[in-house]
Length: 148
Image (cartoon, rainbow, N blue to C red):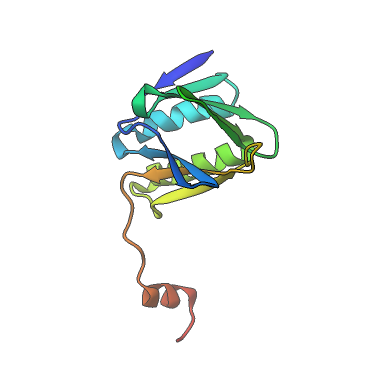
């Protein structure tokens, strides 16, 4: 079974330099619960794939597998993202903590994907639409119980 989901912001494939590109997904608070449910269906094998619409009407197909590395294949009209269970669970952990707390403690997470055959590095960036401002250094030191 295939599921379709539309994020408010289309996914973007951005070239960072000639040897590295990034697949960016931005999730807003209003779509968080529904997106988490779609990813949970994928994680538990209740659906085979999840399709998202992206920039320039490009489609992103997300699948889950038990392999050790996540990979992405980019073509002109489609991107196929194959996430290993560990990486899918990391994305879900990030999104579910945000859902539970009402705000994300960090602005994004990065998932390192396997390089392609040409050795180009690839990264998945999942960004929270809203997040807490960074903690001041003195507050972090106080919480850690360390003195300057």
